[in-house]
Length: 174
Image 1 (cartoon, rainbow, N blue to C red):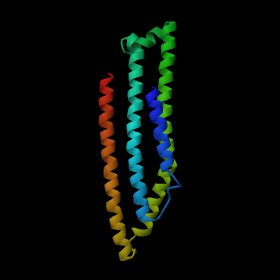
Image 2: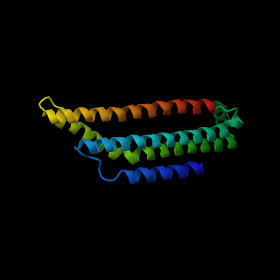
Image 3: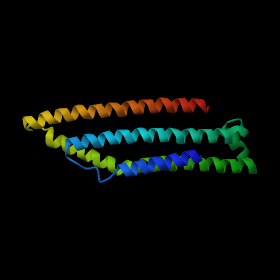
């Protein structure tokens, strides 16, 4: 748990330091750079989320070990107002709340920057991607789309890797 808190704080500090400014731009090169930073931050967020999930599942497994590893066994004891079970349920709910809070903090740190970047991308599409754009703008926009595709592919790969790792973690603690 302490390792998770230290890592979470380090990630939050990194994300905060990399967010400088609103993130809005209509400059294509700057937008590509911001998108690359966004994808890099996303990889960090995925890794942090995996640590949060692994710690949560480990704590949950330890807590439920007294109840054959099953929440329904715990709840049966709770229904009979068993004090130990009531305390275990309270602790379980606390670790669940902590998990949600940590994940929410991670997402919140990049929401504004991500929204500004989305506005940037939409505006760049309108400015440079319309049918009446100059040949130079069309050429630059084509290169921009190619660079954005590279970042999108990286994001897709990070997401796929994240879900594979998450599935592995979940299988480990079942």
